[in-house]
Image (tube, rainbow, N blue to C red):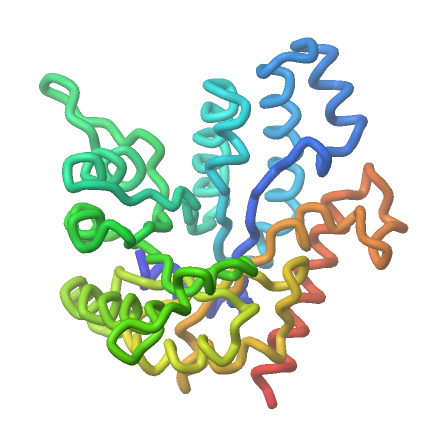
Length: 309
């Protein structure tokens, strides 16, 4: 699947992943009203609104981006109907040819991580049959329980030819409270990066190149990204924090390798809620999907311009 991601990036000339992180405040009023008219102001109504909102965005940008990243929590908040829409969104995006990164940030003791890995990337056995439950192509993984929490995901990745992105240096302001702590003369994020490099070497596709094991490093920390790019040469880096969190194209150059690959940049609300931004306000609520498309085009240009220099 890492090779499929690379193929999609080359085809679109856009190392961009659109974060499908729907919050009700982002969903246009007319979509909510239509959903509530069918299902009432219920969890089912909210889930239907999210589905219609997602579908409009995906239809508008699927030819421009190689991948999408639905954030599970934004669906879990609506309970079982929300998770049904999470699955529906995953399936729809795959039908459109997009690589799907499930932003689940799971990681637990071995048996629990194995269940997470099977549920999101692998196949669960039911009697004499097996089923793919959520069936994302990649998921995000929290490594802070150590290799016990990561190795089950790696095993499923090798079986299913899928992938993971391991949290190394996250984009949020308080990440340094733990991740920047010095341990044996190095910041903790660097030590985690070294572990990711080891795991990457153990989980390579037969054709070489990049590993099934990637990393998450925030755009808001470009200097750390420069260091970690060197520490993890075989790992694709998922870079959150572009746009709404302050990251911009000029911050991203060092996340890429000399081959122009090695990183994919995430923007969530900067794309899906673009119509609420001043520069895209002229699209209006009913043009929210067109505003998302315009935001992707602007982001692609910003990144291309930065890499060209």
